[in-house]
Length: 180
Image (cartoon, rainbow, N blue to C red):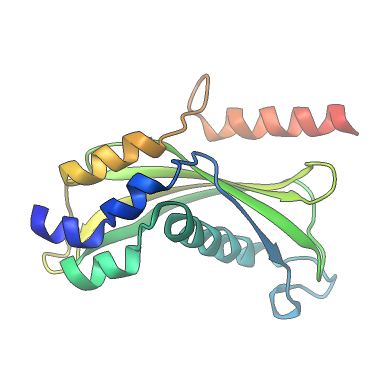
């Protein structure tokens, strides 16, 4: 398996790129993703967040999850989403999406994603996603290989304080109220 990992984790690229622990990108909210009120449809937030995280992994770390699945038959599947809609996002609005690895274990990772506006750092939505490392051939959860755990340690950006979605959501909402 280590030989397979060496081919899927671009070690040269990862060693030359700075290990950004809170990568960010921008997205424009498209018509087909909006509801009749011209707000981003609740179900589409997750698509924007997952697409941003995939882009962040490739752009900032050279970590190609699709290549890993093709070459090893192993990948990450969503086990749970927790989402909070803080303020609406409008049609054709440009948003910034930040993602980070909050925690990881032998079998899973927890990613935090924030959607923000581009003007005053206002947070529009918070998403926590737990992914499980999955063996497609055996159809079961598997343990992360040593190389992945080492990579996770390099990009891990834990939350200070209690690791609770409800508490994190409350922190953000309280901070948003004080900005208003």
